[in-house]
Image (cartoon, rainbow over all chains, first blue to last red; front, side):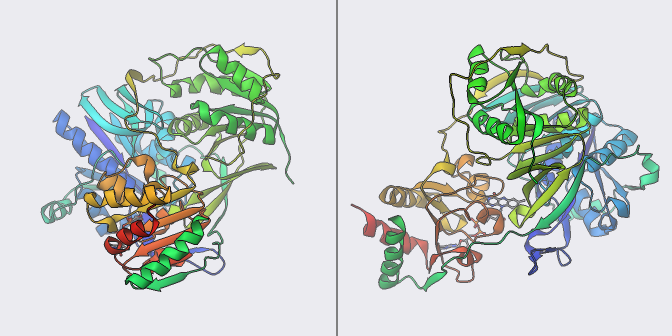
Length: 257
Length: 314
Ligand SMILES: Cc1cc2nc3c(=O)[nH]c(=O)nc-3n(C[C@H](O)[C@H](O)[C@H](O)COP(=O)(O)OP(=O)(O)OC[C@H]3O[C@@H](n4cnc5c(N)ncnc54)[C@H](O)[C@@H]3O)c2cc1C
């Protein structure tokens, strides 16, 4: 089985700051693998264990951050056999429908039986790239996969935890699935797998290599701004002695009215 | 200037969200065309809530998944007005359907919209960067697809004098159908934390599972529902997923929110910032939660919680 697992590099949330005008400053935030995509990679590793004969290719597209050797090693240390990155300056801040089209072109070039994506990414959290990718490739596609039940050549059976019910689905390959954050607990790479990752093959493609048909403009970004926060009283009692807890309890009592 | 589209399509895979999507349709469109899958009663329900047209896709078929109706819906939509919007509830199915329709109709998609406006094009706002910011996007394709979050539109009230005939739509086989081999109701009690008046939320600072009892006692004394941060639900699994608060969990708007051992990172806080009064117990005086609190105490919850229980019990 040929599996592609897609991932995105996003700015480290902890290091994003908000400037006075509400604009986000991501300049000090190092790129890291989107948390939800780690679940996707882990799911691929899980399927490989079930089917035996299997190759996992990690796939990403974006700007020059993808050239970073550390970021490449990071993804490869989590189980993929090789890596394909599509790097172009103009892929730096794509909207989801554009991302899906670039990934579709790359997946077609690579070939696949199953593509696994995360349900969303920590930056835009648009939650549509995986499904759009499957739809563009004209294969079976579904989101919210919460468990891999079984996998063999030609089919995977999965569970899908929805808002009100759980579905067990039999999906004929080729297919694209997006997995939810609770599907697994991503393994932390060991020193051994990190070292081995440095020796795995990497393919770098450019926009030209993919011969992507023109990407339609369907959505435009208008603005990204931090909302104004409501004023809070910020009465903070320092210490948990009897009197201090009693004072806190008094505030709580008033708030209950 | 806010204007109206001549027609807005609506669909909800969950019956309880239908009044909100129809309300959105009424606000943004002259006509409201609802897709209905299910019993005849549900056609009547859609009309009573304010749909002006109902397109009936037939009874629920247990072997089909709702997402396999995408081709059928896309066909109906593309036969109608070219400048149009479809509103869906921001459920997992709603998002899957919207993305499929987006490709089939070559249309822009925005999920989890917190605000939708129609001017020249359809514009929507939604949370980005884990709640740090609000992104505003404009859909420039003739057809727009938007899934809306809870409470964006005030639910429409049913008026049984409003009735109509439904148009039957025949099913179009999807290119690659998915077989549903089993369907079961979700385990566990269902809570709607989003509607609670008082919420006590626990975080990793709770330390051990045994401490949940003491928090439950405080909850009983204050008449509060219990909620938590993500690690408690997803890593420890000490509470159901329905109880975790934040950008990827529940959005609260209670009168009172009391955080116990929660650091207050933005991905959690965005779910709590709608609270009228925010209180926090945390042993680290530099914890970000204190920046968002009305009242805070720098202390050990193992000491503070038992003291609060005795202060509020009976
Ligand atoms: C894309 C993304 C989405 C996310 N979505 C969510 C979400 O929806 N909801 C969510 O909650 N999180 C979410 N997170 C995770 C979030 O960033 C935080 O990691 C999480 O909220 C931290 O949980 P916590 O405060 O319980 O734990 P910690 O950050 O570990 O904080 C524990 C706190 O307890 C205090 N403490 C410890 N012991 C005691 C004691 N005895 N008495 C008093 N205080 C004590 C500590 O001082 C500390 O402040 C998301 C993260 C990402 C990247």
